[in-house]
Image 1 (cartoon, rainbow, N blue to C red):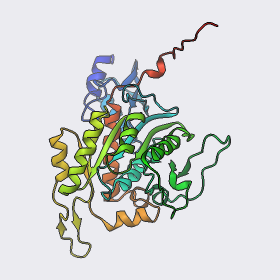
Image 2: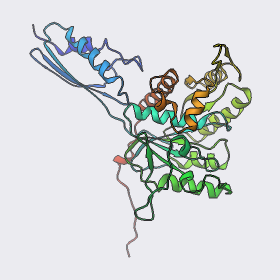
Image 3: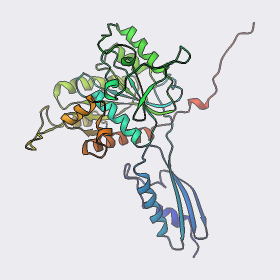
Image 4: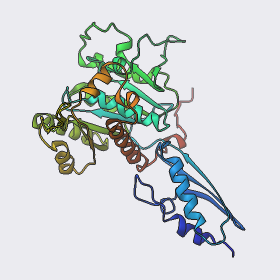
Amino acid sequence: MAVTEAALLDALKTVTDPNTGRDFVTTRQLKNLRVEDGDVSFDVVLGYPAKSQLQALRRALINAARTVPGVDNVSANLSVEITAHAVQRGVQLLPKVKNIVAVASGKGGVGKSTTTVNLALALAAEGARVGILDADIYGPSQPMMMGIEGRPESADGQTMEPLENYGVQVMSIGFLVDADNPMIWRGPMATQALEQLLRQTNWTDLDYLIVDMPPGTGDIQLTLSQKVPLTGAVIVTTPQDIALLDARKGLKMFEKVGVPILGVVENMAVHVCSNCGHAEHIFGAEGGKKMAAEYNVDYLGALPLSMGIREQADSGRPTVVNDPDGEIAGIYKAVARQVAIKIAAKAKDFSSKFPTITISKNS
């Protein structure tokens, strides 16, 4: 019995992406379908990192193809192709950096840096090339959280090599000054330093650069959100009303400068007593979820108020690398996957396809 392409496509449509709920045929992720007698081959290309899921997806697609009468052998090649996506108008992409994600909060102390480092590590664990820019000039914490010491090297005296640990490239002002030396800089000076850290670092072919933004919505944050080519922003808050007041301001700031909000992460959502197991909403219940609904943005997930998260970050081994198969690491990985999927669904950047036009006067 001859195998038809139509029958195969119908069978393959029954397999849906567990992350998006959509099949690979309708979304045109299925490519190069070939049918020769009873031999079938095809490719599936995902737009987000999913190393831990590729094997199960491949099995499901092969099994679906084998349900078609006449199919003997099935060859399925699954791969990931992360591309650059659109940013604010008038802002050029960075060389060797495809997508930049700002992790921001309206106020300090809500776990923004801890969220940043675990999201970056989760994306790297799924096979992406990831970097972290510690943009908190006055309180850099990524060197400690990433367990990195030392100074960046510079071969030409103009650019710096990022430091690296756990497969993630990192740049921070904390590498350039003593840990106990306060940065007594006014806004313009701090902003200029950040732009230098961003643009004079030799990032190596990054799929995602995660920016740990300074807390607040002042001059530094506004300048960064206007000058840095941002694919999107993640807002971190606690359920507390005071934190939500400031988180709303951060969200509105990005909206005003044309940066899409990828979603809201609710930190310290609940505390579970390590002795008796009693759950208590110390900072209130579901404030972040309500805020996300109010502004019609995605609610990415909730993290507990946990001593383990704090201890692991302080020791330079954040949760995703310290306990990669644990429940909390699973939450971070789910949040990171949603962020990557949201980015993959955005319009692609085509600026690199167009020639640069220069006008010169004849002498």
